[in-house]
Image (cartoon, rainbow, N blue to C red; front, side, top):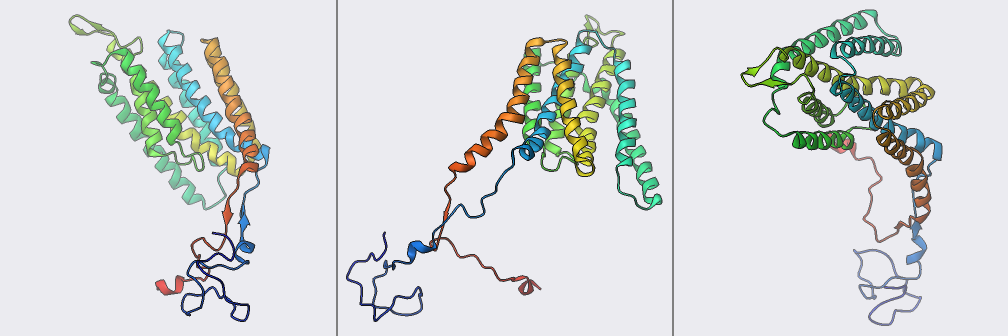
Length: 313
């Protein structure tokens, strides 16, 4: 349908066409004048991205991938007997205390009573979680006992992928329930295949206690990496953006280095993935902006600009 289109001859200029529906006019229903395409607008509201700003935002995705790699590295160290669960547990406790202190130091200044009440509630929540997790560790380590190892590894890979997909990158604090539950389920699957989970012909032997400690350690580190660390990272991004960028780079280097200590080929793949996500994908996003061709015009649905909130009261 072009300008001045219609099923018959248009009337002379003495009868101007008006874009109204409530008035009968001597024009065909599909008639438009030459001003129709004058209201055409292209790429209205197109957002212009800056490369390094997009790289900084993509760093959050890259560091989360590195966190998954670090978690798998810790599991590999325990699976190969290179790291004891007790050492890893005390290291996690120290990291949790340092991270909590940094989180409180970056918090906005407020009422001291509220801070004391918050710390007391945090201590209660941590005590409840540690108590229940330690108590249910003998049960959790046997959840996948009847499942073959290949299926357990497949479920672990699927759950970690679901964690990465469902993770709330725009607002990582608090982490999403789906991503956190997927990561915890993956940690339970991995803990059930640690060396401490051995059986004898007569049932469980004396190795059941180390296996429970392995499960408890894996769950604690899963909470530390996938639940508490995103909260601290969000606080760093809000209060110290330049520190946030350095931390993302440090986590990526640790992830590649840790995986490379056990699997050099995997470290190369991880480095290539991080480089693609952090450097190549932002460049591709900016390059594709020039190919956008969104058009707006009088054929679009009407948008009410008036504030109608007073009708809701």
